[in-house]
Length: 261
Length: 337
Image 1 (cartoon, rainbow over the protein chains, first blue to last red):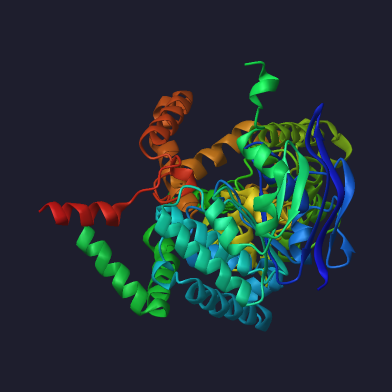
Image 2 (image 1 turned 180 degrees about the horizontal axis):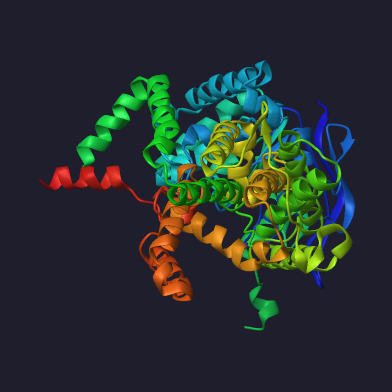
């Protein structure tokens, strides 16, 4: 097992607020890695640091043996990291297929002249985007929506479109931010199967999620954050039985005698 | 009417080449219909502004960088052509792309320091840039003739024929507009166009998908500025005299109003906008300066009723952020019935 995404003592401070504080993390190839924690624990901030949206206050991030600390997000995307967003960031006024086609941006190299003169590069790129785009939609089960405008789709389908778009980058690792938010139990279940299937296809996946059932059933390793600090990392059984995790979620038990009652 | 339109559309989709041929033949025949140079002059203006508005639309409509001072690039193009043909005796046909490249370079210079600026902040920078260029044209007497302007700009040659009449300029402008529409329609459908649109729709998502937003914004700005330079270069020998008063901020707003009225983010919109505004200019000549009031009212009404412009797609981020669910609504109605 080799480490694909590594965070070494990364911190992010917004002024005096330590949103993420000295967090270590190792995601191995082939993992479905869950990141959980109470609201405001710094999960999304952590994702934004990994994908280059926020600059890092201190620490280092390594992707597949390469230091990607403080690189721009478009560069990191080229290095093989794709992500989705907590509040879906689709191109709402474009069709689903067009959304996916934009995902092929880094894998095509049409220049201005190519597009005006319809050169062979252009034709090759368009063919690739069209064919592979349809292939991804087929795999994700969105073929029927390919010409629908993305903004018109239901919430659950939009999430899938966002994942399909990320897959078009052919990433080494896929970061998914709260995919099950706002979904009903059936949709969540379908999503669970979908993510497992993606993992079987060879994608390494990191996922932030609040739904414990979802996390415990899909992820093979879990990182727990609370108030920006890492409090636990390990497999689901280990995390479930960890005392600190329970305290973070349910609070400390108070002994009657200590409370003075 | 609607039936006629849909029939035309079906015919167009079936026989694209034939319909292009018919359209081109009609356009080429226009000078025969209007031999009066007054009317041809108006049509020339319409085509010139269609080119300018189209170029501005690439910037404002496709990547949503809101440029107000577009007249600056137009000015650069016109002065480049005038100076180079007067001083260096360059050929008009070579000067067309050269002026475009000069304007595009200026576009890059404005763009580079402002890549991080968005919306109204970028607009204000372009506004300032427009004024700077106008003041340079006004005050650098040695090069630009200052307030006297540049006189006697040589007329272009076309295989030994001197191009002077408004009819022959009609063909030059028409050719440029057709080249512009052809090139732009192809760029928009390619990876580059998609990158521009993705920046317009959601810059954060575009970056996370690996779109180098800075590079594509700069490219977009340069592409738009290029066509303003070309339009300027075609305009200079047409009037044979240019000075800085031709390229004021008002000119920039004039072009902008065409883009807004016609519809941002569509290829045909700016052409329509140019037709509407220029015809209105001619119709409202009797009330002279009050026609500015008419423009303003037109823009306000447009923003109210059709923020996406005459030909703008109703399903666009430019139509006020509403997503129309026509089909779904129709389906619901059917269910009710």
